[in-house]
Amino acid sequence: MQNNVVTANGTAGVQTGELLLVPSTGCERLHAYPRGIGVLRC
Image (cartoon, rainbow, N blue to C red; front, side, top):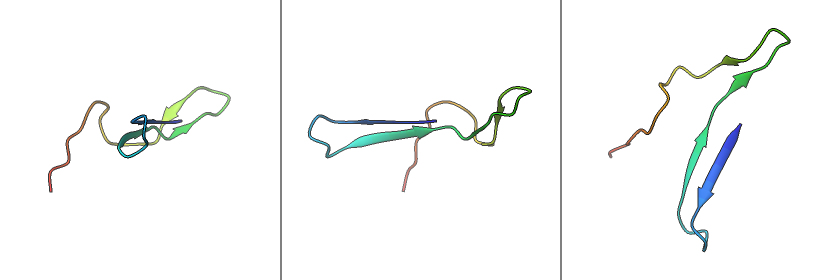
């Protein structure tokens, strides 16, 4: 599942996503990173 939000002119955006395994027994998250907004500083 991956939602990408971009500006109207397409020059900037935010990419979010979640990798899921969906067997018949339910849903399992495959990412270890905590949910929420993260900030990357370079």
